[in-house]
Length: 478
Image 1: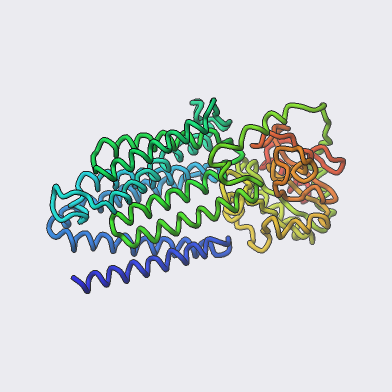
Image 2 (image 1 turned 90 degrees about the horizontal axis):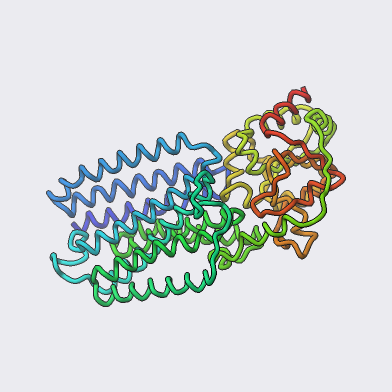
């Protein structure tokens, strides 16, 4: 038995190394495929080791229950594979939010099972023995974080989807009087019932604690507007990791602790990066401090005119340029125009035009959305640049082409100290010699602000579906 447990520990350590290598690989698009392979391999090792451990410790009962475990793996794996295969690029953020909700719900279900039958998990020696105080703390934390993650992710899913009429699922923030104070009261009450569970190990405080945590998850997400959804996605990713780690402690499963901690810490770091890229305060985003103010500012001001052009005009400008920087946004994803864009870039490259892509950290609906979009079209990684690397080159660029992006290129962030997005780092497309912007209409972005870039003398607006416009430009260049 000792040798077997040593082998289990070794295999869990190997799986942990694979997970660390997965995170390292996912840090750059060029190595992301390798990172995914590392992650899947690590998860396979961890899952198979856990299954073998169930049989070893459980004996005949463990072997009998193994069929249920394998059936769940097959059914869950089939559903996950089908969803991943069918999901559209524009729906990827919703899928991520859905996965986060499932992780949170899993943590809650495990916590409930442990409270109901702790002896089945080896926490106590015999049925009826009280839960140790240490395990009560771990279950208290894991269950609360899991419940908040589940209900919060469900709301995030609805906001990202945008197809549900229920008010809580609308992209606009939902606010009411004394909202923060009510949230604080619910949070303190939740902790209070958690402490009561720790003291008594009774079901009543545990279930009340869970119910309040589910409500709190909803309340902390509904006041957050669509502009802050990238931060919410990464924040919920962090929550799901900490929920898994908390349950891992109660199960005394080192693999779950390590994997959960990796997800939790990396998600927290990513959330900080996202907030920095949006000039947001992380705590204000969590508490619903942003998301609604900008919409008020968008309605004022005198009527302004823009200069519009046709695909033929754009083809002429691009064909005579030496350097072109393309800024992709969510509108490009909606139009599924990434493959047409790559073809256009190839045609320009054949004419000797130097083409580069500029990616803002929060472009799209989730972190890395535009990177994945371009990777799907097999855009060369050496043509794709992050904001800090590409910004110094805009001033020397002949043409900046903005495709479906809005807030991330708004000069008001730099030029208007009274703007709601003042101080937000942006892609400095306005510095290019000529700016071409493709949008379906003059509608505002997620921040609800009019974009000063559209009204510059050097800017040409080209209205229409991104895919059709890009295809027409490509034909005109040919």
